[in-house]
Each structure stands twice: as structure tokens, then as C-alpha cells.
Length: 76
Figure 1 (cartoon, rainbow, N blue to C red):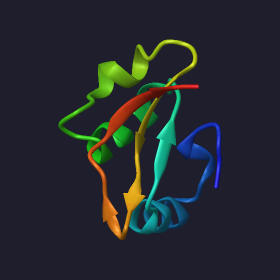
Figure 2: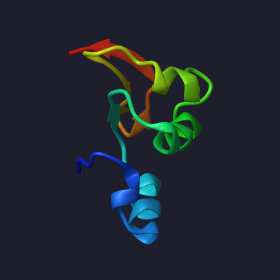
Figure 3: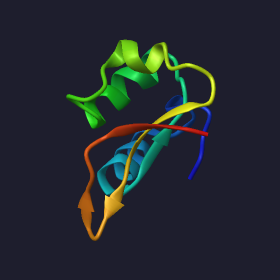
């Protein structure tokens, strides 16, 4: 599932997605989404990290063998 920002989703759907998703990949995002993603990727990345992410860079957290990885960065 891909969206430009989380506000596009109904609250119930947003809660269901975040409660069940295994892999998260994000480019630079706005303030509201940064607060949400910082909770998902704490302590490696905070709100400011998401707001200042350079072009072509990503932050991600993968589900590997049924276990979430530590969040890390990458380049596209």
C-alpha cells in the first residue's frame, strides 16, 4: 500500500495498517507523518530526521523471517 500521506486514510484503516504492516519504507515526509513514523522507527530516527531526509534517501524497517529489523537508511 502506498500513499502520499497518512491523512488520506480513515483512522480505522490507518490503525489497522500500522498494527499489521511488516515493512515500512519512507522518503522525506511532512510534520504530521513524521511524528507518526518517528514512533515506528524510534530510537534510530526522530521527527527532525524525517523532515530533513535528503532527496533519494529512505528510512526503512523490514520484516525478516517474521521479525522486524532495526530501522536503517538507504539510497534509491
